[in-house]
Image 1 (tube, rainbow, N blue to C red):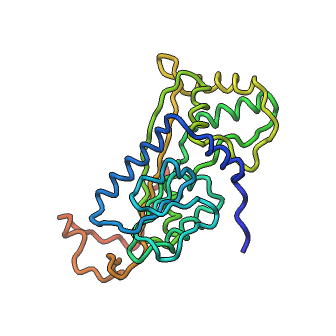
Image 2 (image 1 turned 30 degrees about the horizontal axis):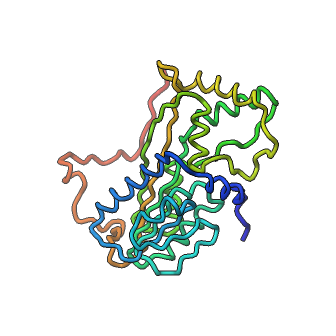
Image 3 (image 1 turned 45 degrees about the vertical axis):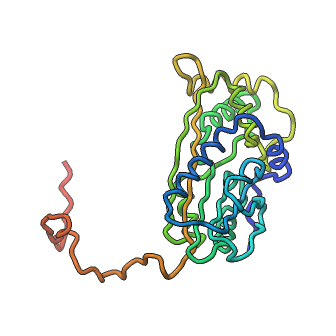
Length: 279
Protein backbone atom coordinates (compact mmCIF):
# COMPACT_ATOMS: atom_id res chain seq x y z
CA UNK A 1 0.00 0.00 0.00
CA UNK A 2 1.40 3.41 -0.96
CA UNK A 3 2.07 5.93 1.76
CA UNK A 4 0.08 9.21 1.76
CA UNK A 5 1.90 12.27 0.43
CA UNK A 6 3.62 14.27 3.14
CA UNK A 7 1.63 17.43 3.78
CA UNK A 8 2.98 18.41 7.17
CA UNK A 9 6.44 18.99 8.55
CA UNK A 10 5.80 17.43 11.97
CA UNK A 11 8.91 19.01 13.50
CA UNK A 12 7.79 22.49 12.47
CA UNK A 13 4.22 21.78 13.60
CA UNK A 14 5.42 20.66 17.03
CA UNK A 15 7.55 23.81 17.30
CA UNK A 16 4.63 26.04 16.30
CA UNK A 17 2.32 24.38 18.81
CA UNK A 18 4.85 24.78 21.61
CA UNK A 19 4.65 28.54 21.06
CA UNK A 20 0.83 28.66 21.26
CA UNK A 21 -0.33 31.13 23.87
CA UNK A 22 -2.59 34.14 24.38
CA UNK A 23 -6.20 34.47 23.26
CA UNK A 24 -6.90 31.07 21.73
CA UNK A 25 -10.44 32.04 20.83
CA UNK A 26 -10.96 29.34 18.20
CA UNK A 27 -10.08 26.60 20.67
CA UNK A 28 -12.36 28.20 23.26
CA UNK A 29 -15.20 28.26 20.74
CA UNK A 30 -14.55 24.65 19.72
CA UNK A 31 -14.53 23.55 23.36
CA UNK A 32 -17.80 25.36 24.06
CA UNK A 33 -19.43 23.71 21.05
CA UNK A 34 -18.10 20.32 22.10
CA UNK A 35 -19.77 20.54 25.51
CA UNK A 36 -22.98 21.79 23.92
CA UNK A 37 -23.13 18.84 21.54
CA UNK A 38 -22.28 16.28 24.18
CA UNK A 39 -25.05 17.70 26.38
CA UNK A 40 -27.54 16.80 23.63
CA UNK A 41 -26.49 13.14 23.72
CA UNK A 42 -28.55 11.18 26.20
CA UNK A 43 -25.60 9.20 27.51
CA UNK A 44 -22.94 9.29 30.20
CA UNK A 45 -19.45 8.61 28.89
CA UNK A 46 -17.16 6.80 31.30
CA UNK A 47 -14.06 6.17 29.17
CA UNK A 48 -13.41 9.21 26.94
CA UNK A 49 -10.26 9.91 24.96
CA UNK A 50 -8.98 13.13 23.38
CA UNK A 51 -6.65 13.30 20.38
CA UNK A 52 -4.91 16.67 20.28
CA UNK A 53 -1.73 18.47 19.41
CA UNK A 54 -2.27 20.94 22.26
CA UNK A 55 -2.68 18.90 25.47
CA UNK A 56 -2.18 22.00 27.64
CA UNK A 57 -5.42 23.40 26.18
CA UNK A 58 -7.51 20.25 25.68
CA UNK A 59 -6.16 17.98 28.41
CA UNK A 60 -8.72 19.01 31.04
CA UNK A 61 -11.75 19.43 28.78
CA UNK A 62 -13.26 16.04 29.70
CA UNK A 63 -12.83 14.65 33.20
CA UNK A 64 -10.81 11.47 33.33
CA UNK A 65 -10.09 11.45 29.61
CA UNK A 66 -7.11 9.68 28.09
CA UNK A 67 -5.15 12.34 26.18
CA UNK A 68 -2.96 11.29 23.23
CA UNK A 69 -1.01 13.09 20.53
CA UNK A 70 -2.31 13.35 16.97
CA UNK A 71 0.69 11.37 15.73
CA UNK A 72 0.24 9.24 12.59
CA UNK A 73 -0.23 6.17 14.84
CA UNK A 74 -2.64 7.01 17.67
CA UNK A 75 -1.82 5.52 21.05
CA UNK A 76 -5.36 4.28 21.62
CA UNK A 77 -6.15 0.70 22.57
CA UNK A 78 -8.76 -1.02 20.38
CA UNK A 79 -12.26 -0.95 21.86
CA UNK A 80 -11.13 0.87 24.99
CA UNK A 81 -13.28 4.01 24.80
CA UNK A 82 -16.92 5.00 24.54
CA UNK A 83 -16.06 8.52 23.32
CA UNK A 84 -13.17 9.75 21.16
CA UNK A 85 -12.72 13.47 20.49
CA UNK A 86 -10.29 14.53 17.75
CA UNK A 87 -9.65 18.13 18.77
CA UNK A 88 -8.48 20.77 16.28
CA UNK A 89 -5.78 18.62 14.70
CA UNK A 90 -7.31 16.66 11.83
CA UNK A 91 -6.61 19.41 9.28
CA UNK A 92 -2.85 18.83 9.78
CA UNK A 93 -3.02 15.05 9.22
CA UNK A 94 -1.23 13.59 6.20
CA UNK A 95 -3.77 10.74 6.29
CA UNK A 96 -7.06 11.99 7.76
CA UNK A 97 -8.91 8.78 6.85
CA UNK A 98 -6.29 6.81 8.76
CA UNK A 99 -6.84 9.01 11.79
CA UNK A 100 -10.60 8.42 11.62
CA UNK A 101 -10.20 4.67 11.16
CA UNK A 102 -7.94 4.46 14.20
CA UNK A 103 -10.42 6.49 16.23
CA UNK A 104 -13.25 4.15 15.20
CA UNK A 105 -11.25 1.08 16.16
CA UNK A 106 -10.58 2.63 19.57
CA UNK A 107 -14.32 2.87 20.21
CA UNK A 108 -16.54 0.28 21.80
CA UNK A 109 -19.62 -0.74 19.79
CA UNK A 110 -22.04 2.22 19.66
CA UNK A 111 -19.29 4.55 20.91
CA UNK A 112 -19.29 8.17 19.77
CA UNK A 113 -16.66 9.97 17.70
CA UNK A 114 -16.60 13.77 17.57
CA UNK A 115 -13.98 15.55 15.48
CA UNK A 116 -13.32 19.28 15.24
CA UNK A 117 -11.06 20.79 12.60
CA UNK A 118 -10.60 23.90 10.50
CA UNK A 119 -12.57 24.05 7.25
CA UNK A 120 -11.77 25.10 3.70
CA UNK A 121 -12.92 28.73 3.86
CA UNK A 122 -10.66 29.52 6.83
CA UNK A 123 -8.54 32.62 6.05
CA UNK A 124 -9.26 32.22 2.33
CA UNK A 125 -8.43 35.89 1.72
CA UNK A 126 -5.03 35.42 3.35
CA UNK A 127 -4.27 32.59 0.94
CA UNK A 128 -5.24 34.76 -2.06
CA UNK A 129 -3.34 37.81 -0.83
CA UNK A 130 -0.11 35.92 -0.18
CA UNK A 131 -0.31 34.09 -3.50
CA UNK A 132 -0.89 37.26 -5.50
CA UNK A 133 1.83 39.20 -3.67
CA UNK A 134 4.40 36.44 -4.09
CA UNK A 135 3.63 35.88 -7.77
CA UNK A 136 4.01 39.61 -8.42
CA UNK A 137 7.30 39.94 -6.55
CA UNK A 138 9.04 36.67 -7.35
CA UNK A 139 7.19 35.14 -10.29
CA UNK A 140 6.54 31.97 -8.28
CA UNK A 141 4.56 30.54 -5.37
CA UNK A 142 5.42 28.85 -2.09
CA UNK A 143 2.88 26.93 0.04
CA UNK A 144 2.03 29.33 2.86
CA UNK A 145 -1.54 28.51 3.94
CA UNK A 146 -2.63 24.97 4.77
CA UNK A 147 -5.15 23.43 2.32
CA UNK A 148 -8.21 22.49 4.38
CA UNK A 149 -11.08 20.16 3.56
CA UNK A 150 -14.56 21.25 2.51
CA UNK A 151 -17.59 20.20 4.53
CA UNK A 152 -18.87 17.65 2.00
CA UNK A 153 -15.43 16.06 1.63
CA UNK A 154 -14.94 15.75 5.37
CA UNK A 155 -18.36 14.14 5.76
CA UNK A 156 -17.45 11.61 3.08
CA UNK A 157 -14.33 10.69 5.07
CA UNK A 158 -16.56 9.58 7.96
CA UNK A 159 -18.27 7.12 5.66
CA UNK A 160 -14.97 5.87 4.25
CA UNK A 161 -13.72 5.29 7.80
CA UNK A 162 -16.71 3.05 8.55
CA UNK A 163 -18.70 5.20 10.96
CA UNK A 164 -22.43 4.72 11.30
CA UNK A 165 -24.90 7.63 11.24
CA UNK A 166 -22.25 10.14 10.01
CA UNK A 167 -22.99 13.86 10.28
CA UNK A 168 -20.82 16.82 9.28
CA UNK A 169 -21.70 20.44 9.93
CA UNK A 170 -19.81 23.69 10.33
CA UNK A 171 -19.69 26.87 12.37
CA UNK A 172 -18.40 30.12 10.88
CA UNK A 173 -16.69 32.81 12.92
CA UNK A 174 -15.92 36.20 11.35
CA UNK A 175 -13.19 38.27 13.01
CA UNK A 176 -12.03 41.85 12.33
CA UNK A 177 -8.33 42.73 12.69
CA UNK A 178 -6.82 46.17 12.87
CA UNK A 179 -4.09 45.20 10.37
CA UNK A 180 -2.53 42.35 8.43
CA UNK A 181 0.17 41.51 10.95
CA UNK A 182 -2.40 41.20 13.74
CA UNK A 183 -4.03 38.38 11.80
CA UNK A 184 -0.67 36.66 11.23
CA UNK A 185 0.18 37.07 14.92
CA UNK A 186 -3.12 35.46 15.93
CA UNK A 187 -2.49 32.44 13.72
CA UNK A 188 0.99 31.96 15.20
CA UNK A 189 -0.40 32.36 18.72
CA UNK A 190 -2.84 29.50 18.05
CA UNK A 191 -0.08 27.22 16.76
CA UNK A 192 -1.42 27.50 13.19
CA UNK A 193 1.67 28.96 11.56
CA UNK A 194 3.08 27.56 8.32
CA UNK A 195 4.22 23.97 8.91
CA UNK A 196 3.77 22.69 5.38
CA UNK A 197 6.40 20.21 4.25
CA UNK A 198 6.70 21.89 0.84
CA UNK A 199 7.23 25.44 2.11
CA UNK A 200 10.31 27.46 1.18
CA UNK A 201 12.82 27.52 4.02
CA UNK A 202 14.41 30.85 3.14
CA UNK A 203 13.32 34.04 4.89
CA UNK A 204 10.70 35.82 2.73
CA UNK A 205 11.30 39.44 1.68
CA UNK A 206 9.67 42.09 3.85
CA UNK A 207 7.94 43.53 0.81
CA UNK A 208 5.98 40.28 0.42
CA UNK A 209 3.90 40.92 3.53
CA UNK A 210 3.56 44.61 2.80
CA UNK A 211 2.14 43.83 -0.64
CA UNK A 212 -0.03 41.02 0.76
CA UNK A 213 -1.50 43.50 3.26
CA UNK A 214 -2.41 45.83 0.39
CA UNK A 215 -4.05 43.03 -1.57
CA UNK A 216 -5.92 41.80 1.51
CA UNK A 217 -7.28 45.28 2.22
CA UNK A 218 -8.70 45.37 -1.29
CA UNK A 219 -10.32 41.96 -0.83
CA UNK A 220 -11.86 42.12 2.65
CA UNK A 221 -11.90 45.30 4.71
CA UNK A 222 -14.76 47.03 6.49
CA UNK A 223 -15.80 50.70 6.56
CA UNK A 224 -13.36 51.38 9.40
CA UNK A 225 -10.40 49.91 7.54
CA UNK A 226 -10.20 46.71 9.58
CA UNK A 227 -9.37 43.45 7.82
CA UNK A 228 -12.08 40.80 7.91
CA UNK A 229 -11.13 37.14 8.30
CA UNK A 230 -13.41 34.12 8.31
CA UNK A 231 -12.73 30.94 10.25
CA UNK A 232 -14.65 27.70 9.72
CA UNK A 233 -14.93 24.97 12.32
CA UNK A 234 -16.08 21.64 10.89
CA UNK A 235 -17.69 19.20 13.34
CA UNK A 236 -17.69 15.51 12.45
CA UNK A 237 -19.95 13.11 14.33
CA UNK A 238 -20.16 9.35 13.88
CA UNK A 239 -20.83 6.19 15.84
CA UNK A 240 -19.00 2.89 15.97
CA UNK A 241 -21.34 0.39 14.27
CA UNK A 242 -23.60 -1.66 16.51
CA UNK A 243 -26.65 -3.88 15.90
CA UNK A 244 -28.76 -1.71 18.24
CA UNK A 245 -28.54 1.31 15.90
CA UNK A 246 -31.27 2.22 13.39
CA UNK A 247 -30.75 0.35 10.14
CA UNK A 248 -31.86 1.40 6.65
CA UNK A 249 -34.80 -0.53 5.20
CA UNK A 250 -34.36 -2.82 2.23
CA UNK A 251 -35.26 -1.06 -1.04
CA UNK A 252 -38.85 -1.79 -1.97
CA UNK A 253 -39.92 -2.78 1.55
CA UNK A 254 -41.95 0.37 2.29
CA UNK A 255 -45.62 -0.23 3.26
CA UNK A 256 -46.93 3.26 2.56
CA UNK A 257 -46.50 5.69 -0.31
CA UNK A 258 -44.69 9.02 -0.06
CA UNK A 259 -47.52 10.64 -2.03
CA UNK A 260 -50.00 9.64 0.71
CA UNK A 261 -47.78 11.09 3.42
CA UNK A 262 -47.48 14.36 1.50
CA UNK A 263 -51.18 14.46 0.60
CA UNK A 264 -50.50 14.84 -3.11
CA UNK A 265 -51.52 13.09 -6.31
CA UNK A 266 -49.01 10.65 -7.73
CA UNK A 267 -48.66 10.80 -11.52
CA UNK A 268 -46.76 8.13 -13.46
CA UNK A 269 -44.03 9.24 -15.84
CA UNK A 270 -44.79 8.93 -19.56
CA UNK A 271 -43.23 6.03 -21.41
CA UNK A 272 -41.22 8.44 -23.50
CA UNK A 273 -40.11 11.97 -22.70
CA UNK A 274 -39.90 14.19 -25.79
CA UNK A 275 -37.57 17.19 -25.42
CA UNK A 276 -39.04 20.57 -26.46
CA UNK A 277 -38.34 21.85 -29.94
CA UNK A 278 -35.59 24.52 -30.04
CA UNK A 279 -36.71 28.08 -30.75
